[in-house]
Length: 201
Image (tube, rainbow, N blue to C red; front, top):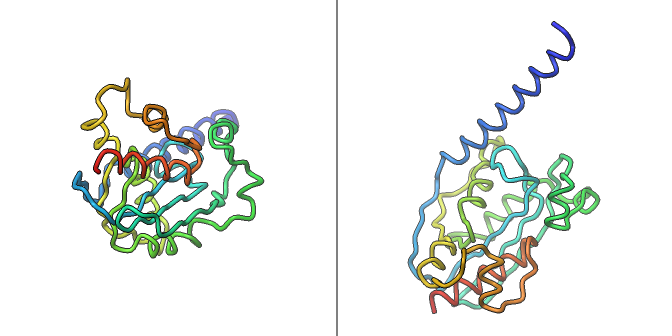
Protein backbone atom coordinates (compact mmCIF):
# COMPACT_ATOMS: atom_id res chain seq x y z
CA UNK A 1 0.00 0.00 0.00
CA UNK A 2 1.46 3.38 -0.99
CA UNK A 3 2.11 6.07 1.63
CA UNK A 4 -0.36 8.34 -0.16
CA UNK A 5 -3.07 5.69 0.06
CA UNK A 6 -2.37 5.18 3.77
CA UNK A 7 -2.53 8.93 4.38
CA UNK A 8 -5.87 9.18 2.57
CA UNK A 9 -7.25 6.29 4.63
CA UNK A 10 -6.18 7.99 7.87
CA UNK A 11 -7.75 11.27 6.81
CA UNK A 12 -11.00 9.48 5.93
CA UNK A 13 -10.97 7.66 9.27
CA UNK A 14 -10.42 10.93 11.14
CA UNK A 15 -13.25 12.61 9.24
CA UNK A 16 -15.62 9.73 9.97
CA UNK A 17 -14.73 9.84 13.68
CA UNK A 18 -15.36 13.60 13.83
CA UNK A 19 -18.68 13.27 12.02
CA UNK A 20 -19.68 10.43 14.35
CA UNK A 21 -18.83 12.59 17.36
CA UNK A 22 -20.92 15.46 16.05
CA UNK A 23 -23.91 13.21 15.25
CA UNK A 24 -23.63 11.53 18.65
CA UNK A 25 -23.62 14.88 20.44
CA UNK A 26 -26.63 16.06 18.43
CA UNK A 27 -28.60 12.89 19.17
CA UNK A 28 -27.90 12.87 22.88
CA UNK A 29 -30.34 15.49 24.13
CA UNK A 30 -29.93 15.40 27.87
CA UNK A 31 -31.66 18.66 28.71
CA UNK A 32 -35.27 19.83 28.96
CA UNK A 33 -36.63 22.67 26.87
CA UNK A 34 -39.30 25.16 27.86
CA UNK A 35 -40.73 28.50 26.73
CA UNK A 36 -42.09 29.50 30.12
CA UNK A 37 -41.23 32.92 31.52
CA UNK A 38 -38.60 32.96 34.27
CA UNK A 39 -37.12 35.80 36.31
CA UNK A 40 -33.99 34.04 37.55
CA UNK A 41 -31.72 32.47 34.93
CA UNK A 42 -28.29 32.04 33.36
CA UNK A 43 -27.56 33.35 29.87
CA UNK A 44 -24.87 31.22 28.22
CA UNK A 45 -22.80 31.47 25.05
CA UNK A 46 -19.76 29.64 23.73
CA UNK A 47 -17.29 30.64 21.05
CA UNK A 48 -15.75 27.58 19.40
CA UNK A 49 -13.12 26.40 16.92
CA UNK A 50 -15.88 25.32 14.52
CA UNK A 51 -19.53 24.34 14.34
CA UNK A 52 -19.44 20.59 15.07
CA UNK A 53 -20.23 19.65 18.66
CA UNK A 54 -18.18 16.64 19.59
CA UNK A 55 -15.50 17.44 17.02
CA UNK A 56 -14.69 21.13 17.56
CA UNK A 57 -13.68 22.78 20.84
CA UNK A 58 -14.81 25.65 23.05
CA UNK A 59 -12.50 28.69 23.05
CA UNK A 60 -14.55 31.14 25.15
CA UNK A 61 -17.20 30.76 27.83
CA UNK A 62 -19.55 33.64 28.51
CA UNK A 63 -22.25 33.39 31.18
CA UNK A 64 -24.39 35.99 32.95
CA UNK A 65 -26.52 35.36 36.03
CA UNK A 66 -29.82 37.20 36.45
CA UNK A 67 -32.05 37.46 39.51
CA UNK A 68 -35.42 39.11 38.91
CA UNK A 69 -34.04 40.14 35.49
CA UNK A 70 -31.14 42.04 37.12
CA UNK A 71 -27.60 40.93 36.34
CA UNK A 72 -25.93 39.63 39.51
CA UNK A 73 -23.00 37.59 38.22
CA UNK A 74 -20.60 37.15 35.30
CA UNK A 75 -18.31 34.37 34.15
CA UNK A 76 -16.06 35.15 31.20
CA UNK A 77 -12.96 33.21 30.24
CA UNK A 78 -10.96 32.12 27.24
CA UNK A 79 -10.37 28.37 26.96
CA UNK A 80 -7.29 26.71 25.53
CA UNK A 81 -8.71 24.26 22.96
CA UNK A 82 -5.38 22.43 22.71
CA UNK A 83 -5.59 22.76 18.96
CA UNK A 84 -5.12 25.42 16.30
CA UNK A 85 -7.90 28.00 15.87
CA UNK A 86 -8.69 28.22 12.14
CA UNK A 87 -8.19 31.64 10.50
CA UNK A 88 -11.90 31.92 9.60
CA UNK A 89 -12.84 31.52 13.28
CA UNK A 90 -10.32 34.20 14.26
CA UNK A 91 -11.85 36.51 11.66
CA UNK A 92 -15.34 35.76 13.03
CA UNK A 93 -14.60 36.00 16.76
CA UNK A 94 -11.41 38.01 16.99
CA UNK A 95 -9.94 35.23 19.16
CA UNK A 96 -6.39 34.29 18.20
CA UNK A 97 -4.19 31.34 19.11
CA UNK A 98 -2.03 33.70 21.17
CA UNK A 99 -5.03 34.81 23.23
CA UNK A 100 -5.81 31.26 24.37
CA UNK A 101 -2.25 29.97 24.65
CA UNK A 102 -2.08 30.38 28.44
CA UNK A 103 -5.82 30.06 29.11
CA UNK A 104 -7.18 27.14 31.18
CA UNK A 105 -8.39 24.01 29.43
CA UNK A 106 -12.07 23.12 29.56
CA UNK A 107 -11.31 20.34 32.08
CA UNK A 108 -10.05 23.02 34.48
CA UNK A 109 -13.04 25.35 34.01
CA UNK A 110 -16.14 23.20 33.56
CA UNK A 111 -16.74 22.70 37.30
CA UNK A 112 -16.67 26.47 37.82
CA UNK A 113 -19.29 26.87 35.09
CA UNK A 114 -21.50 24.13 36.55
CA UNK A 115 -21.27 25.75 39.98
CA UNK A 116 -22.04 29.17 38.47
CA UNK A 117 -25.19 27.83 36.78
CA UNK A 118 -26.40 25.99 39.86
CA UNK A 119 -30.01 24.89 39.43
CA UNK A 120 -31.06 27.89 37.33
CA UNK A 121 -32.50 27.51 33.83
CA UNK A 122 -30.20 28.35 30.92
CA UNK A 123 -31.16 30.85 28.23
CA UNK A 124 -29.27 30.77 24.92
CA UNK A 125 -29.80 31.93 21.36
CA UNK A 126 -29.97 28.93 19.03
CA UNK A 127 -29.61 26.86 22.19
CA UNK A 128 -29.03 23.52 20.47
CA UNK A 129 -25.60 24.78 19.35
CA UNK A 130 -24.38 25.69 22.83
CA UNK A 131 -26.03 22.69 24.48
CA UNK A 132 -24.46 20.39 21.89
CA UNK A 133 -21.01 21.64 22.88
CA UNK A 134 -21.82 21.56 26.60
CA UNK A 135 -23.07 17.96 26.66
CA UNK A 136 -20.35 16.78 24.27
CA UNK A 137 -17.96 17.45 27.16
CA UNK A 138 -19.29 14.30 28.80
CA UNK A 139 -17.06 12.36 26.41
CA UNK A 140 -14.14 13.60 28.55
CA UNK A 141 -13.50 11.24 31.42
CA UNK A 142 -14.71 12.58 34.76
CA UNK A 143 -17.04 15.28 33.35
CA UNK A 144 -20.75 14.94 34.09
CA UNK A 145 -23.13 17.69 32.98
CA UNK A 146 -26.39 18.09 34.94
CA UNK A 147 -29.77 17.88 33.19
CA UNK A 148 -30.58 21.56 32.69
CA UNK A 149 -33.79 23.30 31.69
CA UNK A 150 -33.09 25.38 28.59
CA UNK A 151 -34.92 28.29 26.96
CA UNK A 152 -34.09 29.15 23.34
CA UNK A 153 -34.55 32.84 22.50
CA UNK A 154 -34.87 31.96 18.80
CA UNK A 155 -38.14 30.17 19.58
CA UNK A 156 -39.29 32.96 21.92
CA UNK A 157 -38.47 35.67 19.36
CA UNK A 158 -40.25 33.87 16.52
CA UNK A 159 -43.50 34.16 18.47
CA UNK A 160 -43.02 37.80 19.46
CA UNK A 161 -41.02 39.48 16.67
CA UNK A 162 -42.70 38.69 13.38
CA UNK A 163 -41.51 41.44 11.04
CA UNK A 164 -37.82 40.57 10.68
CA UNK A 165 -36.46 38.53 7.74
CA UNK A 166 -34.92 36.01 10.17
CA UNK A 167 -34.21 35.61 13.86
CA UNK A 168 -30.43 35.64 13.88
CA UNK A 169 -28.92 37.41 16.87
CA UNK A 170 -27.47 40.22 14.75
CA UNK A 171 -30.80 40.73 12.96
CA UNK A 172 -32.72 40.98 16.23
CA UNK A 173 -30.25 43.34 17.87
CA UNK A 174 -30.39 45.62 14.84
CA UNK A 175 -34.21 45.51 14.90
CA UNK A 176 -34.25 46.37 18.61
CA UNK A 177 -31.49 48.98 18.14
CA UNK A 178 -29.23 47.31 20.67
CA UNK A 179 -25.48 47.69 20.89
CA UNK A 180 -24.01 44.27 20.19
CA UNK A 181 -20.42 43.00 20.29
CA UNK A 182 -21.20 40.10 17.95
CA UNK A 183 -19.35 36.77 18.25
CA UNK A 184 -17.93 37.69 21.63
CA UNK A 185 -19.40 35.33 24.22
CA UNK A 186 -20.29 38.05 26.74
CA UNK A 187 -21.48 40.41 23.99
CA UNK A 188 -23.78 37.68 22.72
CA UNK A 189 -25.00 36.97 26.28
CA UNK A 190 -25.89 40.63 26.83
CA UNK A 191 -27.80 40.71 23.54
CA UNK A 192 -29.57 37.42 24.28
CA UNK A 193 -30.66 38.67 27.71
CA UNK A 194 -32.03 41.88 26.20
CA UNK A 195 -33.99 39.92 23.58
CA UNK A 196 -35.41 37.56 26.19
CA UNK A 197 -36.50 40.44 28.42
CA UNK A 198 -38.03 42.31 25.46
CA UNK A 199 -40.03 39.24 24.44
CA UNK A 200 -41.27 38.29 27.91
CA UNK A 201 -41.80 41.51 29.84
